[in-house]
Length: 353
Image 1 (cartoon, rainbow, N blue to C red):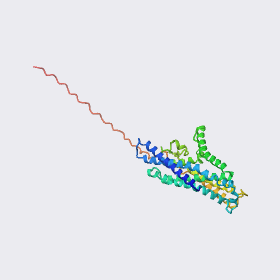
Image 2 (tube, rainbow, N blue to C red):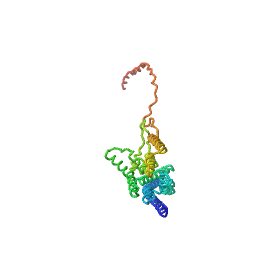
Image 3 (cartoon, helix red, strand yellow):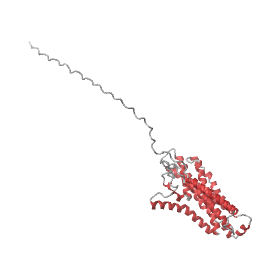
C-alpha cells in the first residue's frame, strides 16, 4: 500500500465515519427533541458508539481480504515465487512478513478512527472499557480474516480465486450463520442454539454493544437486535443455575484466535516447495502446546462468568418460633345477679273536696 492509494483509502475511511457520525447525531437529536430528558446526552453517545463500531467493522471486513488475498498468489503470478523461496528465509518468516505488511495498514485504519470514536465520551453513556472491548474485537476480526485471505492465497495460487473464496467465507460466516439462526427458530418454533452465532463477526460486536447498552436500548435486553447478540437474556433466578452466562463475544474471540493460528500453520506448509507436510520436533511441540491451549481455553469458556445463585428467587425460610406456653385457664366465679328492684306500693288517690 505504497503511493497515493493508501492515503486516499484512509481519507475516504475517516470521511465516511465522520459523515455517518454526524448523521446519527442529527437523527437522534431530532427524535428526542420532543422528549427532553436528562439521559438525552447518554443516549446520543451510545447510538454514536454503536453506529461507529458497526460501520468500522463492516469497512474492515470489506478491506482486509482484498489486501491479503494476493500476498502469495501475486508472487506466483509475477513469477517471483521461486526466487522468494530460494532465499534463506523460512516459510513462516515469509508468511509473517506478508501478513504483517498487509495487516499493518488495516490496523492503521482501525487506530486512525480512535480519535473520532473518542468523541462519544463527550456525550457519556459509554465506559472506556466498552470502547477497549470494541477495539479488541475489531483487531482480532481483522487478523482472522487477513489470515483467511493469506491461506487461500497460498492454497490456490491465483489472486482471483483467493479473493472469491475469502469473500465467500466472509459471507458464510456473517450472513449465512445469521440466516441459519433465524431459520432454525422459525422451523423448530423454538429458541435456536447460541453456538450458531459464535463465528459471526457482527454477532460478536453486537454482544459487546449489548453489554454497554442498558435495558431498552438499541442492543439491550428485549430489543429486536438482542438476537444478533446471541439472545443476551442471561439472567436466571433458580438455585444451582449460573446467574449470568458468558457473552457471545468471548466465544467469538477464542474461536477466531484458534482459527487464525490453525490456518497460519497450514499456510506455512503450503508455502514449502517440497516436504510440505513433514512436521519436525519444533512443529510437533507447537502442535502439542496449541492442543493444550485449546483444551484449556475450551474448559475456561465452559465455565460460567458468575457463580451459581444461592437461594436467589426462593423465599427465605422463616426462623424457628418456639411453641407457645400453655395457657392456664381458671374457672370463672359466678357473679350473682343484682336483686330485683323493689316494688313501690301504689298510692291511693286523694278524694277531692
